[in-house]
Amino acid sequence: MIGFILRRLLASIPTLLAVLTLVFIIVRVVPGDPALVILGDQATPEAAAALRARLGLDVPILTQYVRFLGAALTGDIGTSMVSGRPVFEEVGAVLPHTIDLTIASMILGIVVGVPVGIWAALHRNGPIDVAARLLSLIGLSFPVFVSGIFLLIGFALHLRWFPVIGQADLSDMGDRIHKLILPAITLGLVMAAYITRVTRSAMLASLSEDYIRTARAKGVPWRRVVWVHGLRNASLPVVTVVGLYVGILIGNSVLTEIVFNRPGLGKVIVGALNQRDYTMLQGLMVIYCFLIVVVNLITDLLYGVLDPRVKAA
Image: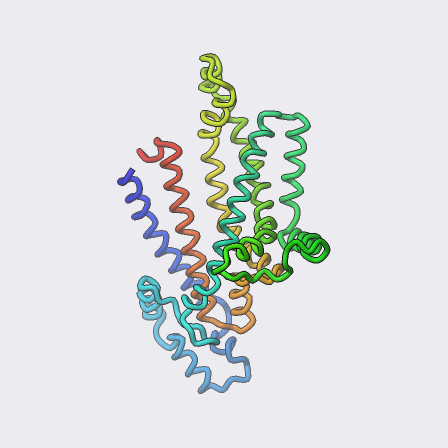
């Protein structure tokens, strides 16, 4: 197992380097002069040249790449041009809110989606299966900002069970959870819809295998056949969907944080776009891509835990 983990860690290094290179290229191939984009078309040539020098854009592209890569690998991803603070400090102040929202939504999606998907598979083509598929389709059809607004109107404005503004005190766990419920439901139900459909398909395929019939012939209780033998082999597609959807959750958190007026990476991204904070946007892209690489690495490690055959590959 240790060898498997080390192989996956080593394999993630080229991926991370490729991601950093891609971020560097994307930021620099965008049409227009970044200095003029930040300062505006009325900027003087002297001011534009000074800003290019400040951004390190006045040196050859290869030198820029070496500087960018070296700084990123040492943890320096730039300084905000608006606040003058390091990007990590700006992000560190709001990242816990985004992590809370992502983890809570993921847990809700798994807790709801996996049992419903198994239940639908066990009642294939019956009323329960049809209802589960219909509800999952409805969940996939609603954009997160639409369902978020509906939840906000119903539970915050009319029933007044939850606050309209979602900025929580991180030192108060009760307040943190209370203001997290509606945003987490907004994102979690969409994830639950995906997981329900994947779990149903995976369970149907797993329950039709020969080893399931053998276990039943030996008198293994049906509950154990479903939850131990069937679910274990159906869990790999579910883990894949969860790993891929975590990146989507982080992206969807932009709209959710705006709807519920929560601090987080989403609001920082919008603010950087509005203020044309070039270095902040570049740093945010690096952090976002790094999170995706870490999630994919964790997904690979879970494969090895769930299926020993993966460790031998």
